[in-house]
Amino acid sequence: MQKKPQSGLRMPESGAVLAGLEFATGSQPEMLSVLRGLVERETPTSDKPALDRCGEYLAGHFERVGGKVKFHRQPRAGNHLEVNFAANGGAGRAKSAPILLLGHFDTVWERGTLARMPYRVADGRVWGPGVFDMKSGVTMMMFAMAGLHAVHGDLRRPVTILLTTDEEVGSATSRSIVESVARRCAAVLVCEPAQGLDGAVKTWRKGVGDYTIRVTGKAAHSGVDFEKGASAIAELARQITAITGFTDLQRGVTVNPGIISGGTRSNVIAAEALTEVDVRIKKMSDAAYLEKKFHGLRAFDRRCQVEVSGGVNRPPMERSAKVLRLYREARRLAGVMGFDLQEMGTGGGSDGNFTAALGIPTLDGLGGVGEGAHALNESILLAELPRRTALLAAMIDSAAL
Image (cartoon, rainbow, N blue to C red; front, side):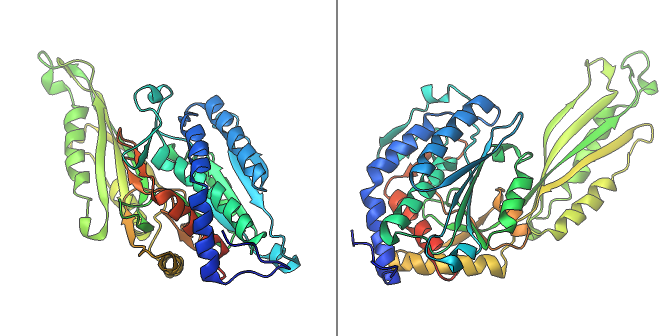
């Protein structure tokens, strides 16, 4: 690898980008060691002790690459981890707004999953629970920072890393922290997994919401007093037919009644029934559209009552000019490294939705390249690990941000 420039001088950009790639490639064995340690520390969102142990493991590694660690401690959720890196190239740099690297280290996998999904490196991939979503992205953050110090000896501007522990269940305890930290940053780079095996970054994500429709009817014996009953199940069935009509694929709105429950016995006319509904929107304006639709529901059978609760809880990350500016810079830097970086969108949400909705430039999908998020084939492409790490480092160091 090229030597660090002396007397505060920085090497030309193309040389620095390629030196960063050389560093990441040479560091791959160590990266895999850290990644294995992360994957083998199982971190289901519901397991606070496991999350906190993993947080301490991460804190130790980030401190070794120069980070100052701060925990946002939680009474029930896992403690959220913030790591700050100072710009030591002069007073002007120290006053610059930081770049935020955003992610999470909770997973959807319960403890014990390793027994049937062990960490392994095989067939050009790294396998294991959480390796794709998103422990490879967390590892990349660590080695991107190490690479910048190795190549330049300093940082162009401060960097903040925020890793949360409840992203997989809606970010209830971390959202306010994410938004507070992001407000003091110039841009947000989200190290969630890339989209597809071609490794596209994400320039839009749908917003996410949940509605519950609860129907109250009137119980009666289905044989003796049928006409005296008012079936909550029958009413709910008609309501479900109505709400599925709210889906508008052309505008990116989807409505999915995913859970249905109700009734007590087959010979009792049901007094209660409910459905839990997932909604996705591409534009924030469609949150008001759905709110009006859901709260406009009325009982078909006037003997029943219909109660609606919920709403959109994760705003969409819209494909804005600010997002595209970051994407174009990432694509330009990828070109320096010799590959073409594409963009895509997804119906799933991330904590980047929150930061983009605040108007802060946000680019998502800068993490591992692979497939199988939340599935038994979860894996990343081994060859992409150093390249994506070098791209993340180049983005952090970019004067355009």
